Length: 117
Image (cartoon, rainbow, N blue to C red; front, side):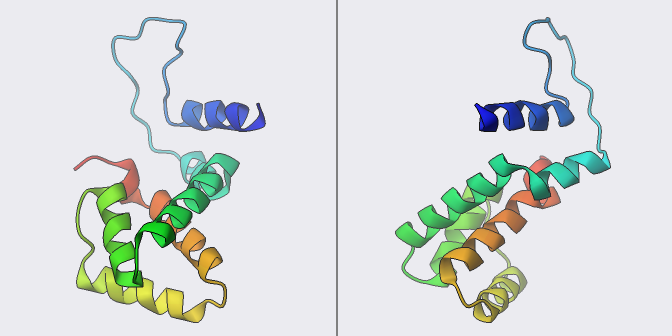
């Protein structure tokens, strides 16, 4: 129930339409609370942890996990620069599971995850 309330609050910040009312078109806003929710909402943190567990379970190497993460989240392959930066970040972390969770949280909070190209 708590996650459900947080999820509804989060979706409301992203112009989620009222499900009890017919809506012909939706507003499209970009406001600071949206970024704060992506950084602090329990549902986003939990999603990042679950994604990290999936990537660790399915990938043999950090590079293959990164390829999978970018395919799942952005529907594209990571650039060589993105791979380089992510591997550098992972190398600085002492707890692999926590490192992947933090990296996934960053990928979920990125602008590219929010917008269609």
